[in-house]
Length: 239
Image 1 (cartoon, rainbow, N blue to C red):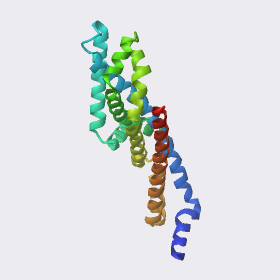
Image 2: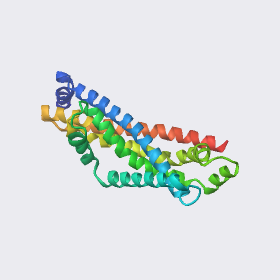
Image 3: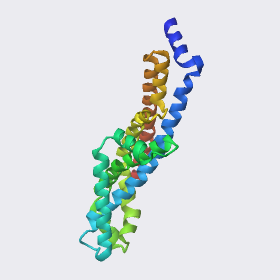
Image 4: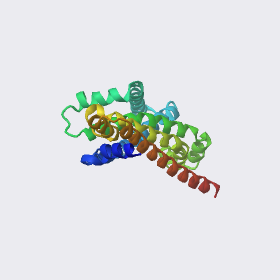
């Protein structure tokens, strides 16, 4: 027991090494939250464009509107293919060493990279949610005189969001864990914080196990909050 206490003191207390963990956790949460906001924004836009193309193509749209929708859908298809077809680590390195080589903020590079990466997966999740809504909902909205956009925003999208919520939470958890690769660009996030302690004290067990437990605790908290929200949505559906 004394040996454990000595190692704990050496790994976390001595020279305030616990600050590597705390500061790393802050950066991890910042990158995760802002990347999620960017990812959801991109994903919703791309998902709607893809669904609009599938639902509207060859029906109501003619002329330049159809051409614009086809172009946007093509761009979205390329975006999804490239982002989902390449590793997040490679995208991070390309963003840091090529696209944003002059950027002063590594946090900004990480946020944009993971936001763009997450957007591709959120888009497909959201598109699946939209397509899961019964087609009769769209037809009912149109029969009431609502436009396509009004029907989507007032009828389809709220139902699609509920259907997509479990997958969106799963994407949030995946995004949180993916930020652990930020150390490759020298960003001192949570995992790198633990690794810095390991490299300083030459003790891998406590720092890395501690980092793993922090990730696990955050994931459990997210899962608990989601279960609480899910129960609330179920109750609202019953009324």
